[in-house]
Image (cartoon, rainbow, N blue to C red; front, side, top):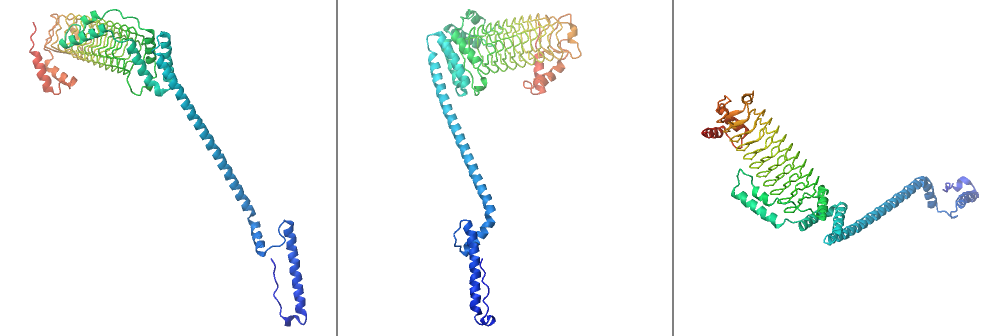
Amino acid sequence: MLFRREKPSEDALGPNSYEIWQEKQVAIETAEIEKIEQKTSSKGYLRWINPMTYVGGFWSSLLDDNRREAIKVIISMFGILATASAAVGLIWTVWDATEDRKLTQERLITDRFSKAATLLSNEDNAVRIAAIYSLERIAKDSPRDHWTIMELLSAYVLERSPLDEEDKVSKNEKDKASKQNPISKQSPSTEVTKKSSKSPKPIANDVQAALTVIGRRESGQDQGKQLDLRSHDLSGADLSYADLSVAILRGANLIDANLSGANLRGANLIDANLRGANLIDANLSDAYLSIANFIGANLGGANLSYSNLRKANLRHAHLSGANFRKANLSLADISKAHLGHAHLNDADLSGAYFSGAYLYKANLSSAFLIGADLSRANLSDVILRGANLLSANLSDASLSSADLNNAILLNTDLRETHLIQSQLESKEPPLICNSPLHNKIKIERNRDCDKVAAALHKRLPKIFPSLDDAEIFVKEEQLKIWN
């Protein structure tokens, strides 16, 4: 900056001194201006500098460092924005490419599906089989089309292998016979079985291929839906280890079919024909099997717990080691069946027909055997602990070494039954009431009538909700007179 000295008075300077002072002052200011011009010219500035510009330059010099830092930050921000923009662009490009690829794949799958579906009607058997396996690959590649393909294959099986007219007639006769005599002690379908006992024709290769695909599908993709194979002719089919859980097979013909290890949990097999079928180790828990025909079928080791087999026909069936825990076998025909080591504990066997059945070492603990026919059955070493044998027929049955502890023998004829007195006098003996015994057994037939009512009320509260109801029932049963 330029500083002007204070002007002195003329009296203080003397004559001619004021002019001299002015000249000096001009010289000083001129010298200072030249110095400033030299400095600014070396930096390329204009030679003339306004005083205010000089002041701004002074303060700018103080802010240069901060400005540089600010510029660096701004440049960095632009770099980040540029990178982010590039990333967004890349993501958009990838997404767009992915969508294009999905659309392309969907178009390809649609084309494949259409071609395979069309080929199912081809006259060449080999072409149809190839189309079936092509559909299987599509079902795996496209979960969205999984169930549609399973429905298509089910419809294909029905079209290619429907029930024949003779099977339909036999079923109608069976239904009519069941309605006319619903509680018959004889086999519920003996006559019908004779009419429909012809050997099944071999299953077609293309039908077997479709069933194989259905059986090994990814059932988790079923979306809670049920396969519908009702009234299909699947006789002789190989469905071993097939997943048919909750499938609808009502009225299906499965004669001589191989269902070993198959998963039929919760399946509907009402009125299905499984004569001679192989069901070894199959899972039939919670299945609906009422009126089904299992004559001569092999269910060894199968799981039928909680299943409904009401009025089912199990004559001559192989049931060794099978699990019938809490199953409903009321009015079922199990005559001459093999039930060695089978589990029938807590099962409902009321009115069931066991005549001539083999039950060696079977477990019938707490089973409900009211009115069951066990005549001529082999019950050696059977566990009948806590079982209810009210009015059961045990004539000529073998009960040697059977466990009868806590069983209820009310109105049960034991006169021709093979057992010994010690089986009725254990620490927890059976409750005997109005049950005639062999003349060699010296036990009063009304020994435990005063205890039976309480036991019935405790074990069967749904039937006998109060003790009074149970006592009235026992008194009525005591009125029966034996010849």
